[in-house]
Image (cartoon, rainbow, N blue to C red; front, side, top):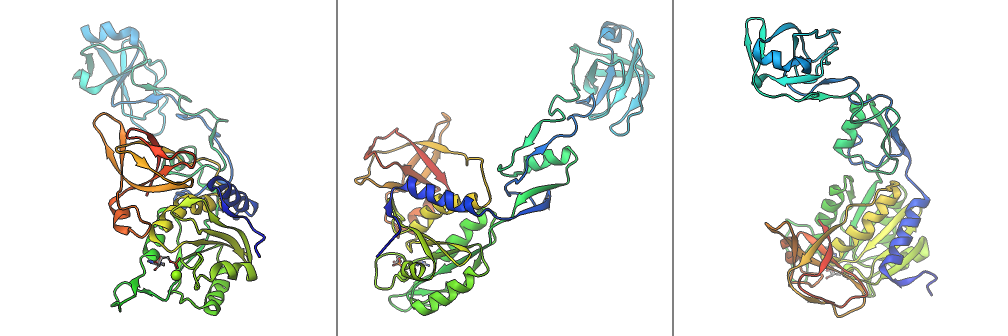
Amino acid sequence: MSDFPTRLPYVQAHAIVDAVARRSPLPVEQLSLTEAIGRIAAEDVVATIDLPSFDNSAMDGFAFRHADLAAASASGLVIAGTQFAGRDLQLAVGKGEAIRITTGAPLPAGADAVVIREMTRVDGARLFIEGDVRQGAHIRREGEDVRAGDLVIRSGSSLGAARLSLAASLGVSRVAASRRPTVAVFTTGDELVEPGLPLRRGEIHDSNRTLLMGLLRNEGLQPVAWPILPDDPARMAAALQDAASSFDLVITCGAVSAGEKDFIPGLLQSDGAVHFWKVMMKPGMPLLFGRLGGAHVLGLPGNPVSVLATWLTLGRALVDGMQGRAEPRLRWFAQLTSAFDKRHARREFLRGRLQPGDDAILRVAPEPADGSHRLAGAARSDVLIVLPEDERLFDAGAVVQVLPY
Ligand code: AMP
Ligand code: MG
């Protein structure tokens, strides 16, 4: 008897994953800027200073009064001082004068243009300008990039290198970010053998562990893999309970379909809770989502391409939600190079190879080897092509969403 939803439309499964994830957000940590890379901000960052915080030169050259330009070409200007990048010497340019300056150096008072060194000739203590310079040239104005009081990083957004360096330039040295979820990874099946060991007939190498560990690490997670679990309900229960007592998220693959040895749905039902089982997606239909002790449990189907599709969609949505991510992930689109007939009403995730063209149109070629066990097809590809439920026939040239991996 099941008291949980099953065979859910994809969008509904996504909504449940998102809601459950956000119900118990991970704790917030204060991190140094280098530690925070890839994390999700847990607080807004508001600028307390202007950027630039003083008018300064954008180039190496000379600061002068633009009104002196004609004089500067004819009879030259007096080089009255030098201001390098560094402490402000509080210099001023008088009429008929120029100050030698470097990039980032405070602009001397009275200067309203900078001429680049390459456009000048120095003769003793005189500077000659060769060519035209517009008023305001090569001057970076105080506050033109950021104003004190500006919201520069929004809580819930991802902390990429550019955002963290902006925080640094504002003088911020630590940021509040969600802790990363800890993740335990299990592969299951009596047929599985570690890569590097020989196979007897009927056995296969465990490829999903490598796939999952790689996909998780790509998201900045540091998953811990358990030894392969045999198809033995007692051993499975013990290992999963153990992991659930100390990890935020337990991911299994295999043993979630309708086979005699697919023990995980029953185990969650008896020892934990099931949020849903089976999603109207292809591949990845048998996906299981539940809870065991204090841990979220994602039971991914065993077929390699199902692992890819379920992780990139609902798995990532779960860890995004746990970390309080509010910024939507970028969505990428491409044109199909050939027609595709989907022949079912589920959401399909087809492997595809991107073909960037000289015409700036991104195209994607569907991979013909589309069985969910066809790992070579996935390895030849670089995206999953998302084919929505309500359409069947996709013409060549149709615009489809793609999920890069
Ligand atoms: P299952 O859902 O356990 O019946 O697995 C579905 C298919 O995926 C079977 O062909 C399994 O042999 C295969 N499979 C399960 N786990 C792995 C794994 N870790 N690596 C490679 N293939 C797997
Ligand atoms: Mg199995």
